[in-house]
Image 1 (cartoon, one colour):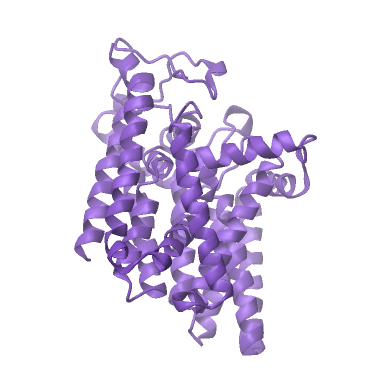
Image 2 (cartoon, rainbow, N blue to C red; image 1 turned 180 degrees about the vertical axis):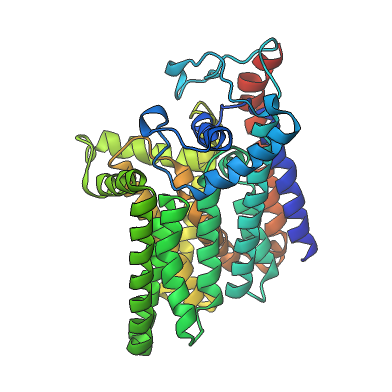
Length: 430
């Protein structure tokens, strides 16, 4: 691994662990519900009913892993992994105040919670590693662009915050990164097995990790279909698709037998998000509201949407990122330089489909957040950086990775100093 890449991973661990320590327990979105699911299975051997935990409809694999971590903690000292919540200020959602009444007297070191946070940090690093491997497939000769794009993904404040919290988001991000890498790795393969595996994973990952991976899977399937039409390899695709259909039916039937309520809830949620709209969804006021919310919560709006980057930083980052995306799109359309490659077009398709899907979700619920874009953070970051990289003079290309690192780490430090420390950390230790 090159020196710049190693440095990025070292800094990622430092800042992610920083978030895990500075954010009091449960202050990350839905953290208490995610922990409660895993804790219930570890202690009681069963998950709570949907009426007792609003995250009960989520796919189970993450919670099996988390329950295993809690079980191991229990072998050491069970009280370190207890499920304990102080007073909940339910009206502090999207308010610049702590949502949980932690203070110097009642705060306790719940080792199981921190252990799960740090396990998630490791999975976040795994996702970044898969993204880096995908970049090596797409732009093998351009190490500077690889480093710049990886740094943008790794040091996005909201990404660091979510990777350092207890949430199944991390499995969704891992699955999205894995699909991105596998698609780039086997794109030119003539193997029917490779094509079939990509189709299987495109269906399977959203069902077993998190539905936020669905746009990435849909984009990969669409790209495979278009590639098949171009290459006229219908026989191989038909065989792969037939095998996949049988596999998916087996998975669905097995899931219906093992967890019928969970499958029903998941299906109802998919239908709800695809077919319903808010009453005010197509008003200019709401369209502006949801767009601004997605922008803010993609770059850095931590906790229960309570503490965020200064708005001007979000505006600057969005302007630079959008300009990079537009430059990349223009160059892909004109088949310029590296942008003419099939893998860069695949990257663009994944990014655009995910952006469209998350924005569509925002027309159903205001709860839609920028973190839903993170399964495609690899493609998004590459496109945002590559547009600028293509038009910069040679000497500026060389310093682009360092520039991205400084800007993004500076944004994290500003978020800590202006929000995380005074709002969350200081009241806890006073």
